[in-house]
Length: 581
Image (tube, rainbow, N blue to C red):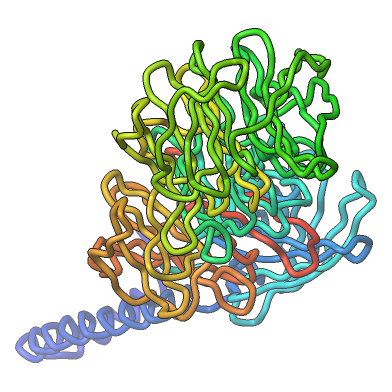
């Protein structure tokens, strides 16, 4: 082999040294070589780390946008806006991942795009919507414009990089306009339930089907499901009760034609309702459908009974100055009449043998035969309004100016056997359908189906509430005046309370063995908090960017949803959230 010039030079140099000196120099050179190698490695590592922390890679010259992002969009063509979230993976200048845009039904939709220097462009794989924009120098935020040709829409967007535990939106369900005034929501029978002004609306997520039931009052504030019934709170300005509502059959009906129902009767299939001031009797099915009506005699009617074939009602006649009890067929044709034993007849019922009539003035109950002959009488326990017969006992609805109105169960001699609470403070009509009592309240304009054994209501706690939850044992609600979250039982007795985990809240729910509270700040969702029943925060999930304002929350068995409203929207939507650790 022929050595290179360098090898020859090195050989000559080495040959000029004594062997001892040569050996010493070689050892020193070995040490220096190892030291230089270490320095080179350290510099290389520092260089790699430095390059990795730089938002723009020197090799690609593009920004690093990989990771989770949360943002908002605002239309330039329509008065709408909403949230979105994206999970982005980057390979050089190419990006891919998924995007959630709840308001247009995007749930984990695949996206593709590119990054060039500090610019990016991406969209869904079906080219329904496209985003273009600029990345901030620290890669913590980005903004730009979007186009959605299919909806003839365009607008602007902003997004922020997400770190730590955060809450994002994955889906949404449109709700009717009436939900604009809604507060709180519940999940039951595979549907969402939201209280409105006079109805409780239900929405089925999969189909968007909308239905409603009659609300038990006009001041609803809190709704939840206890596993059997829908629990709805009607506040202090209303009936001051929490109602148990059956989801299989109507628990509340509106009085027909907004009438003042002064008497109720049941004929084996339908209800008959007496409008005492409008002097009209309505026939109504148990779902609230009016089937017909006819006028009645007199000037002020009260009390209605069905004897198995015909109807009976009482009415004051101003012409004669007397009160009469009229016997009519189900078309309103007069069969007979006789003078009432009292100046002002109240309730009426029939036990199959006799008529029973309550006196609205003297607080007496009279037993009469069908010709009007007085058979017996006894005193009312209170201000008697209407009567019903269940086959064994008489039932009497009574108002009370001091205490809560009651429905008393009595034997034929007037001995009180039991009593249950009335749904409202002005009970009028009362009847029995073979299993349940029906009680009309003149103040609320509603007719309530009641279990004779009671348990129809839960006592409100001693504070105003907006949101309601149930953990299987206790109810939980917010004390809006004191900024507290309180646990209470069915009697309204508070056994636990602790401060809000934030300044203001927009929802309360029980899920996965914990309380979940949605924080609200400046008309948007701020955080979701997981709490134990002592108020300790187990976890906090921050909302990145602007998310719709929460107005109640519910769990569908797997996900946390909330009723949300954006500043430009005239209606609410139900949003499904994702909790990301």
